[in-house]
Length: 299
Image 1 (cartoon, one colour):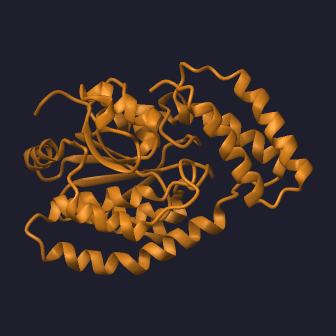
Image 2 (cartoon, helix red, strand yellow):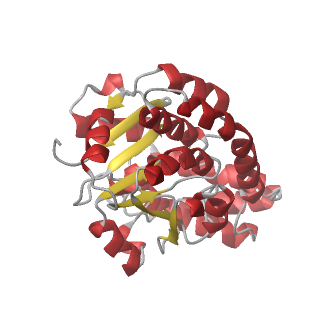
C-alpha cells in the first residue's frame, strides 16, 4: 500500500500526540511539529505508511529525548489483556467453532493501536467480534489452509501491538495444539505501541513457539528493513499470518500469500482493502470493521 494523502495529516496528529504524552513543553511541541513537517515534505509517497512513519518517530525521539513514549501504556495494555484472556480461553473451549472464535478475539485486540487511535474500547470490540461477521471474510479460506497443513508444518505469525499480543495467544495456543511449528515475530525496537520480545514473553507466547525479532523498527513489516534471517523465514514458511493494519499496509502487495487478520481503522487502508478485494469502497468505511483477508490464490 502506498502512502495516501490522508496519511500525512495523520502523521502530524501522531507527532503532536506523542509530544503531549512525553510532557514536552509548548516550545518542544512546536519544534517537533515543525521538524516533522519538514520530514513529511521529503517523504517518498510510493512507500507504505509504516515505512514513512519510521523517520517521523525517529525525529520525534530526537527532539523529545524519549525512545519509547508509549512504554507505560504498553504495560497497561498487556496487564489489562492478561486479566481478560483467561475468561475468553474458557469461552473458546466451550464453543464448536474454536478456531473462528480465536481469530475473532485476536482481531478484536487489534483495536489497541495508538498510531491510528487515541482512545478505544476493548470490551466493545470483543463483544462485536462475537456477533459481527468480518466485513472482508476470507475465514473459510483460513480454515481450509489450516486443515490442509500437515502436522509439523511451519507457521510464521507476525505480531502487531501490545495488549493485542495477549489476545493473539488464544490463536497461537490453538495452532500449537494442532501440532504446527510456530515462529512468532516481534519488532526489534520501540515503535509506537508495537510489541517487543518482552511483551511476547509477558503474553506467554514462548510456550507455543520460537520468538524472534524481524530486524526492523517500523510499525509494520517492511521487508527491505528486515533481517536476512527473517526474510528467509517469511518466504520459507508454509503459512504466514500477519496481524494488524500496519502489517497489512506494508505487506499487502508482496509476492507471497499471506493471511491478514485486522481491524480496519482508517479510510486509506479501507480503500486499499476494497480495491484489492474488488468490493465497493462504501462497504468499507474504515471505522473498525473486522477483516480476514487472504492475499493468495483461491484455495
